[in-house]
Image (cartoon, rainbow, N blue to C red):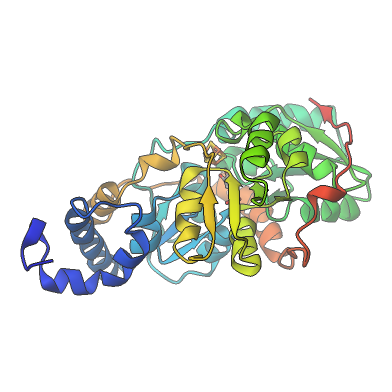
Length: 359
Ligand code: 13P
Ligand code: SF4
């Protein structure tokens, strides 16, 4: 590109060449100069503000490869938030993730580029609901998915993510000396966990609006059209989808699957940016649809990340009494040993159907 073409200087081109190599299949040459300028500005603002950007796997490739200091799944982001020594944390993700970072870092400034970036699971249950559930099932531990508000975490015994839910449920049953646990709010995650453990599960009817839309018919269509493709699905998908897939795992587990197994063709039954981000480092793999877009994750853009660092907006706060109770639940999860990703990715084939009790 000539100096000045589309506003791109040679210096900016050199500075962002590594990012361009990763995003060029998803960004047009016409868009790139504006994005490259924002990436450069954001990286300078991070240094100035002593800030770190924690970016979820569902961020668009320009954010994921351009400005994320740490990229990963919900478990990885929570662990990184606990570890970070930056003064400011920018959560490139949704609101519950920023609250989790604040709970773990009461003395740091936690910013979210768009405070309206929510989550259908987080809004499906309130702290008052959890108090009623506890009254109905006294003595049973409450395990909640991190996709919940701080108020819900404050009523929780231990949090989990899709990466460690089976491990956390089994830990809680053993610690409490019981054979059933409450696992809320994702009904499908609960059913998926129930299929892999002998611990009884009491579940809530929350759903991820992105993953609930996938059907077994989608998988059958994929199998017919692409018989060689390996099909990976997120545990927030309906049971019929997970049973028909080759592997079920968190966003990080799906990414590891591709990195380690290097399939020739792969289908990722999850949010659309996931495949785009993983594809940049998997040149020998062909990524095939379908995917669904998360409207909440897509609220986060390079432009609002730049504005968030420029104006130090929008700060996420959690009342200290709520944070203190929620911290115990999140910290218990973080303190467990890392979940093991199976050496052979055949979990789904070993699944069995188990009824869960729906509240
Ligand atoms: P992961 O924990 O697998 O990254 O999932 C978070 C999420 O919001 C999935 O919809
Ligand atoms: Fe929530 Fe689903 Fe979006 Fe994840 S993908 S943030 S669970 S709505």
